[in-house]
Length: 312
Image (cartoon, rainbow, N blue to C red; front, side, top):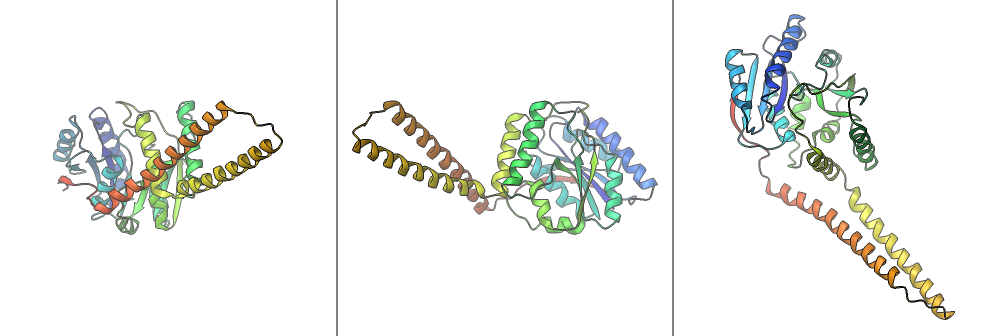
């Protein structure tokens, strides 16, 4: 049995078309006997403020192929996705996660399922190119993937959250209990047999993106601090470098004093104070970010609460 898990936040504009396309794909796969007739499409409402949950309930009552779950409040894309995955794993042999805007080509699902039957537990949907992105988004996204790799995180280049996961991979994922979620970095840690399928990403056919620049930056920071401690090591290295430079400046000042060429440099002193002060504040900020995450983790608060679940 297969489940399509689709997180939704204020997606009333796209849901009618999304549900139609996914149903056609599900029925095609059932007719080709690639998946069971009991397979479902699970929409997860992440505390939407529009009619998203109302539409999901209507879809469920009109056709048992549609399932639905709603969180008690908005918890963010990653938590909504995790809620759907953990709910679906109790029923499915494998789960495919994808976004509600269907910019990810759903025809790649056929190849994902083929790879699953070949023995792969995790199949990543990877963009073959970024032609549809603006230069800024393409440059920053690809730069981020390279940067996070440099920090030592195991992450699949140009992959978001479009993937297939087997039941045993989901069972292992459920053991990862951190509050600060970055699934595209956690899933590679599971260590099962993995592969990728490639596809062209399309344009969003309705509505607006739920990831403006502010949210994208916050998500990027979440990924770095959740997966790597190297920024803390960089601070230590920076401290040694500044200390070494200060020793050189001390030696230089002594030499200038001995040769009687001392020059009072107000500008250089002020610049040094501002530079070192800025580095100190930046370092405190990075350390504070990690301490804040430790604080949240120690509370062991639930990552989400499902207030209603609809499944035939």
